[in-house]
Image (cartoon, rainbow, N blue to C red; front, side, top):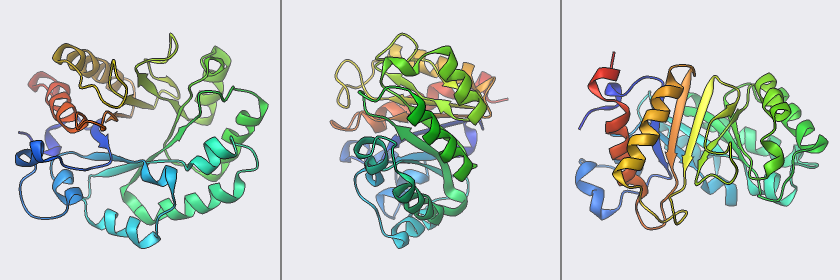
Length: 253
C-alpha cells in the first residue's frame, strides 16, 4: 500500500473519527494509539465528537502532536450552534469553539457546518455565515439538508464567502451529490448507501466517487473525501479502497 505522499496532493481521504477495527488492523501496523497508526496511512480525519460535547484544549493539542506534518483534521461545528440555536444568537458558543479548534495549530483543516434537515436558508443563516467568515479566515464547508439551500443565489453567496457546499451521499436533493459554493474546496461526505451510516459501498460506487474526486481536483485547490459509514465498520475499508482508486498511477503526475 502506498504512503501519504503517493496520493494526489489535492485529494485527502479519511473517515469520521479514526477508530481502527480489528478487521483492518493489519493495514495499520506498528505501535501507538489508533490515531497514530491511522495517521501513518491516511492523511485526513474528521472530528465529529466536538459536535456533541466540548473537549479539553489539551486533548486537541495531543491529537495534533500525534500526527505527521502533512495530516489535517476537519472539525464539525458544535450542535449548540447549528441544531440547538439554529445559527441564531450563536456568537458565544462559536467564539468558544474557534478558540478550542485553534489548539490543533497547523494540523487544522476545514471547519464543517452541518445543518439540521429542517433549517431553511434565509436572512438569519446568511447573516450567520457572514459573521462566521468575518471571524474565521480558513477553509470551511457547509452541509445543508433543506432544499432551499440548493438555489443559484445561495451558491453565489457561498462563493462570495469562500464556503464550499458539501457533496453528500446519499443525496437528499438533485444537486446534493455534487460540490457547490466556493470552488476552491470540494468536500465529499459519503454516509453509506442504501443504509446511511451502515452500508459499505460496492466497488463500482467507489470507482464512480473516485472519478468525481479526481475531476474536482482539476479545479479545486483541495479535495476532501470523508467516509461517515462508521456504524458497522465499513468506513475504513471503503476509505482505503477509495484511496487506491483516487491515486491511480496515471494520475500521480
